[in-house]
Image (cartoon, rainbow, N blue to C red; front, side, top):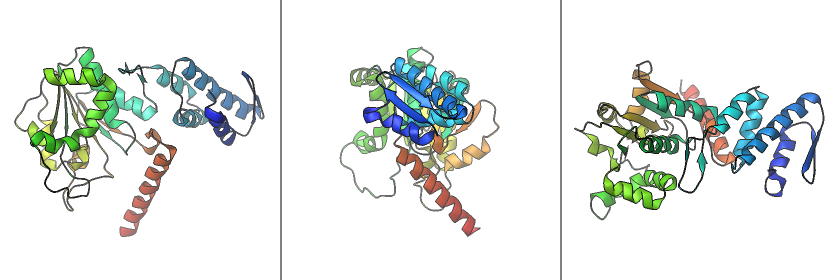
Length: 307
């Protein structure tokens, strides 16, 4: 529970102004009552997670500290105790931040949900988890995943193979998420039966998507027309999730992002939820959170100078 080579214990010593003394299976805390109380609350939450079978990471520890410092420890316990789905490998998937929890609740209660936020916040992965859960519960009959085929600042030129071979590289993150959740065999069987469809955004035109869970990933790279086209595909018995990171737009200069425009136009439309995830919701290496925050501060400063 204290981490390999007591790495979590060392982090706790950095976070709290009290002493931690580990002796066998006992951990003693000495210091001011307030600090000791908060540190003990963090340790109790980590102990609860450990007993639940959760593989603890530095994220759980850091996030538990930040919430308990803000007096929101009760939210932490409730959040970590709710399992959304168990993957093919036995991994329990649950919200790891309050932002993620709000995002999951929005998907469950709205016909269309926008998940907007930086890389590493789980936008796509959690949307795929909710899609698989809906399919297992027979709330929908199929899962449809799509992405705009836009190169990330590069020119790849001619790609060999048929049409599927050409678009596969753009859709690889969606394949990976589904295979991790379902397992390779189950994924391939569902794909063969038509229960899962993965296609570029251009293939959506003219269709009505009924009884389906539809996910549009990397939506920051859609044009205004593409976004409107996609949103109007929604049929009866379907749910849509649109994900994207407005700080990583790969559209040609001067082209307005359809995601940015839609988030403004549809902000108060009934049945639609706009969820904005923050750097605090990043579930990757600690350095990724700091990178996101540093770039955000730099871009904000740059915009201020331009004004």
